[in-house]
Image 1 (cartoon, rainbow, N blue to C red):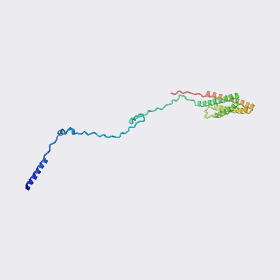
Image 2: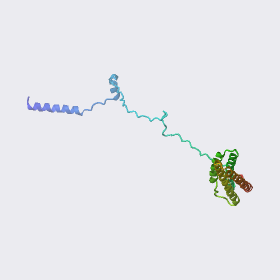
Image 3: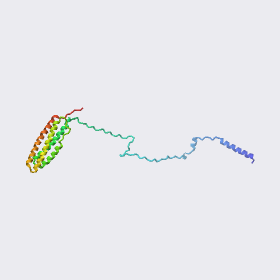
Image 4: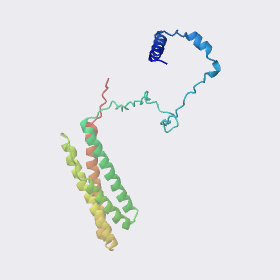
Length: 222
C-alpha cells in the first residue's frame, strides 16, 4: 500500500469522526421514558425511625401533672377583726374594784380566823393567825391612788393596821393558851376581837365612799 493511499484513508476516517460528533442527538421525552420503565423495578424506600430518649414528666405528689403555666391561685385569708364592746369605764372604776377585792379577801380571812377561835381549836387558831398575817402583809400597800381618793387611802391604811392587830393578838393568844397561860390568852383574844370590830368600821367607810363617788358609765358609740 502506497503512502498516498494511507494518507487518504486517514483523512477519510477523520471526516467520518467529525461528522458523527457534529450530529445532535434527538431529545428523549419524559413520558416515553416512564412508559418504557417497568413498574416492578421501582423499590419503595422505608422511612428510618430514630428512637429519641424519653424525657420524664415531673409528677406532683398527688399523682397529677402540675400545671406550670397556669398555677392554681393561693386563697387569700382575711384577717379576723375583734369587735370591742361599746363600754368605757370611769378612771376610778379600776381603783375601786381593786380596793373592794382586797377588802373582800381580808374580811373573809379575818372572819375565818375568828370562827376557828370560837370553835375551840386553838392549835388551828395559831396556824390561821400566821396565814392571815401573811395575807395582810401582801395587801398592805396601795399604788396609783387617784386624786380625790385620800379618804379611801387613809381609811384603808387604818384597816390594815387593825387587821395586823387581829393577826398578832390571835397568834399571841394561841401561843399563851398552848403554854397553859389561859388568863393571858383570853386577854389577847379579846383584844383581837376589838381590833376586828374597828377594822369593820374602816371597811364600811371605804365601801360607802366608793359607792357614792365612783360609778360606771356607758357611752353609746355609733
